[in-house]
Image 1 (spheres, rainbow, N blue to C red):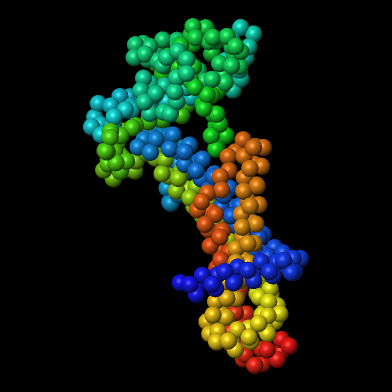
Image 2: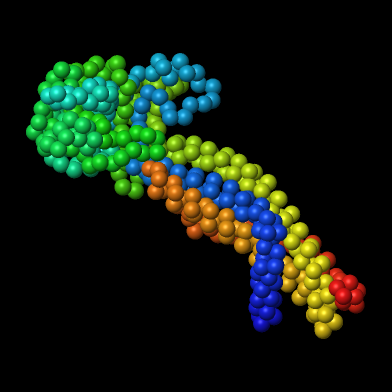
Length: 414
């Protein structure tokens, strides 16, 4: 242990001596390591941050929630697109039958949407998402009421002309006034505001729930023919019920509702958030590979730079190596001494690269609406890759130094 500590200490001192004596040469040689680590870790940092944000947004949809729709979220195989087109939309009758027959579903809700202009006195909000929702929509969708309240069962069943609106829409229409109890116009009809959702901001997909308006589906269907718009039945599983079990049950119930023959294909899709997650994981895997390729070239150049430094270091210290060997130093002592030095130099270049990545994260996080985080995992990865590059680059110079003849070494150094 004492010998190892001595080796590390001497290698550490020699590494910094190399930097101190030949600053420009050493820094230029380490530039490849710095750029390589910067390229790789910056790519991983950006996409790790994106992945975290996307997973949070997907999680807000509900990991134990299934979506019954006309179209699947991922299409493929030999199933022709026109058969998807011919499928019927999910209907209120489908949802009601599911609620009666399902024993694994805790909540089921129906939702559909159109974009319309909303008016309040002289204020207009265009292209607002008008959602027609059933009573339990608040149980299967991630939003919170900031002011007022959600739809009551009586308002939902009777189809009363009331609405819950998003925070940004409330600001656009009412400025600093209290929106609760005010009457707005949608589809040329008067609708009373009973609630405002808390501000949530945009997600990674650029979507926001802050500019939407929710009304009871039984009122919505008096304004729009539900057969003309896409619809979704959202089903949330009971606690401890797996998505697979719920999906199997819903598939059987939907086939029964639609009166499909045993040999007939499903004319509905049951989607889950894991489909989106898998798609993004595949994308990030490809981008991560590209990051390794781009950074790999810089690391290769950096490796040659480290090897060059070490060969020069061996040549400059040939007489010292001879003296050490004459005093009884073993070959492995000389080998490890130069290997540690190569690793220290490479790690220094890697640390500079990580500092550049950290600076990048601070600039982007403070200058743009996107939070970047340099994770501990990426820091460890950067230092580990640097150490491996140093080890590989220094092995040949270190081996050549360890094989020097002490007499020849002292004569050459003299």
